[in-house]
Length: 315
Image (cartoon, rainbow, N blue to C red; front, top):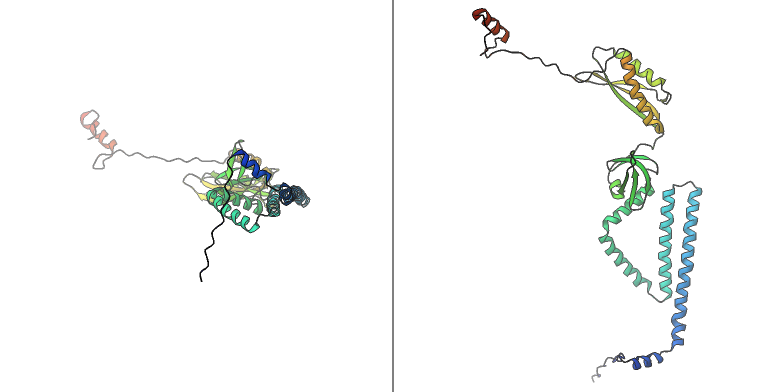
């Protein structure tokens, strides 16, 4: 025996007239609605406000703890912002859950939205990931003089998307973090001491021992040159016009520019003052005049004068 098919319930018509709409409103049990949703909404607001207050306090406390441990200021600021964002996500999820929203469905929607946003903003996310690497790994710090992405300057600030660098002539360079992490980084101020290399050429007729002694003396006499490691002079190359030497001297990193300038000036003064030469590249050009059979031009001119008493023109 077959059972009759069930007919789906018919939805009531939505009232379109003002009087019918007001009649529907009067039929709603507002007290029950307030008891059901009002308390949930109030609980969600309280959870959100209290959670936001706790997130601010905890993130600020984390930054203070890192400050007492002498952690890097950039790292402390990044961890404070990251911890605050993570706690606020948990607060929002908890508040929505108190309203009856299914957290599993909400996380699925957030995951899908995050995937779509990630594909659309992959370059920006690459900068964020690079910024996290720079902040955590710390290849340089604020105030360091570095070479990054082929550019040199003083690091002013490392941000989550970009790094601000100031050149020695006071130009501001803003570098995307992804460019920095994908290229070699040279940190000139990471070590307390730096070596100065000053090349100088002397003539082949000059005394190399004397030249070395002059260079070593001017380095040892400079107050900013370190005693250890001791200055030294090496022969680097035999060039066409000179014997190339290199003066090697160590100084404190903060004194590098001043010491290099002083030594470069002193090298010229002392080399010339001690009778040595700093040759510049030159080439001797010897010109030979002759005709096709190899007879020198002077012989042709002399023979022409003897025969005709007049200067003969070369063929």
